[in-house]
Image (cartoon, rainbow, N blue to C red; front, side, top):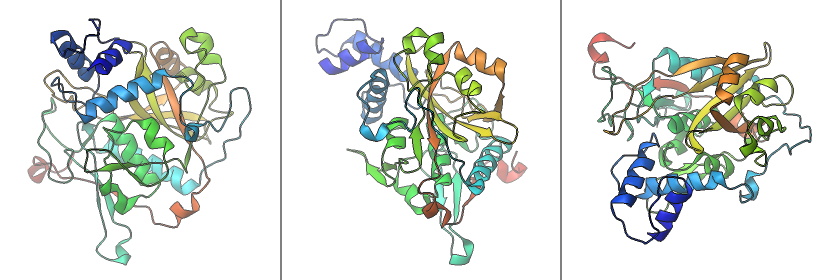
Length: 351
């Protein structure tokens, strides 16, 4: 209990005495913290998921304690050449993003599911964007969207897309699709299922295929609080560097100045033909009554004005995709993306 109070106080959610008593002030701090995390149930109970988010939030406040496997590919001030990823994988990412947007996937607790093919000729099956969090058929949740359909929250979206890009396939169903493991663990661990103590599932790691991107210092010049945190970049720095020394595909964690820690995830990619920067995320929220917003996913073109506005309020930690070790990925066929059929679509059809 003392550690809980100390942790919440460090994160700015608790201002009471560190007395080890789970009283009204501690309960209020837990509720406020849970409400600030899109994936958590706001119930005041400090279970596995809430503890995971607390540890996640504390982790990103540390500057020098990251794991060795989290080492950046490019050290500050040292030029690094990010090699292009195979066109097949880049085009697959664009297809995935455009498909979830055109399908109007909303902000909700869907996590996805993998359906294997019935024979070798069927390929490696398909990845299905689900309505609810527990595979196909788990669609019981509250949303402000009158048409409850396939859905993602931010971390389940970036995790799902990463699994599709690296063709995890059958292993996907043995791992939790975001929500519990923080993105720093997901991107820094070896490519296998990592169990989570006390839970049935684990999560896949993507360390063989991604490396941390570091700032060149301009983000710290604009925001002094980040001057000694080279792993953090605002969107303006990313936009300014898009033509020079950034990877084409980045899985990112996003922090907001209003919260002071990372609480969101997104995918950024750069079209090398036009040097256009794109952002695709499950942006949305959840009310204190645990009602999901249902906000449609979107693809945003990040120009100078968009990047400058974003730099005033948030910053990113980015993991860039590298071509190393992708031969094993390309040896497997890419899976198609499908969507669980919502009850209302049985009569009206998708859309």
